[in-house]
Length: 465
Image (cartoon, rainbow, N blue to C red; front, side):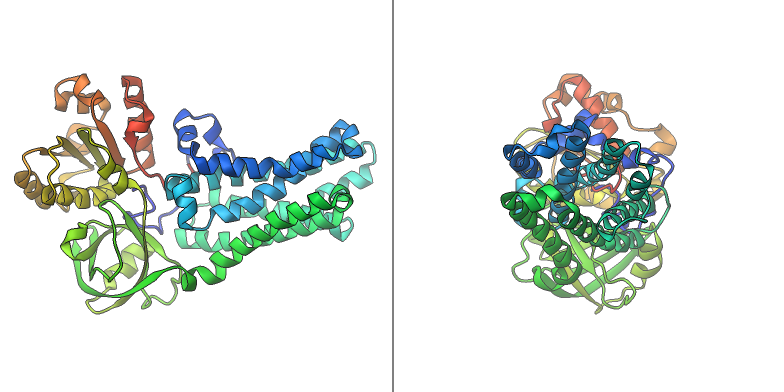
């Protein structure tokens, strides 16, 4: 998995490479990220996104005669629709995960739609202001919260949205602070919605448009309140007790008995909360590093931030935990593909491969699998012996530990050299798990070599990229 699972979900969100690109929907200019958006879910949500504009145009509105007003109205409808749908995408509902072919792809669409929402909200008052030129006094009410309340609500919604995005993109904050700041996003939706229904002359004029926008707005508000108040109580969860806690170098491993009805695939992950830490109410995602047949669940958690460094290591045998899941399609992709494979893990990204390697040993398929685990130095290879045992138990499974300190950064050419011929790589399905820069870089190199993106499998939960 990417940086938000296994490596510690309380990671700092660094601004060094994200500002100002973190405000831009880069998914539409990057071929690999566009591929991540390709799904039945994206098509469905795109049709719903533009539906208010279609309904508005079919009414042949008089306001559309002024091109600047028409563009302003277009952005207004797109903004309220995008904001509403964005909250629906923030849920973890199974039907949406399946439609988007994975929770990470659903979150990719969520991030892209959120960034687009910002531009719709900016362009709406911009073109309204142009249409009112040279009435400076009226134009200022679109920029500053000094006008009538219905207009002021829209201005405040825009500024609050910008402030929350700055917290995400420009400041280096812990994950749980970022997570809590996003709970306030619903206020943006409510303020923008009140502005739209109060100040929108065309919405009041056309009942069908009003009803449809109310449906979208209600879906967004319900999704926000569901995630804010109901998710932790309504979603299926399991109460477990820790059977074992091990400190292995930079890793804290927690074990608990697999609850009844908790069926997971190798390579999946869970959301978990430990009640003993009262200040941390949110659920944190971590990959499962054990196999379903083992009868227990093991999470290997790297100590990389406040929560995973200072809190998680305090866990003891007998502590309670609340688990939700499993989630993710990394494991189902592994089980579905029949080709020989290349697995490339970076650092703590080894966790899902630990589960998959054990599963391959217990259920040999005859596929040839090469696993390359990239670490900074050999001291960080906390499960090196375990993987050596899996390689000894399965002669089709070839494992290599790659120390960047000794060999430099792993490249696609290195993988080709290991397999002795480029064609041996082209014939395989490639699974990647680790830092996003590594996964995207290798995926693009593999693509240049002739491996289509559909045969490079990874899950990217990076909140900004």
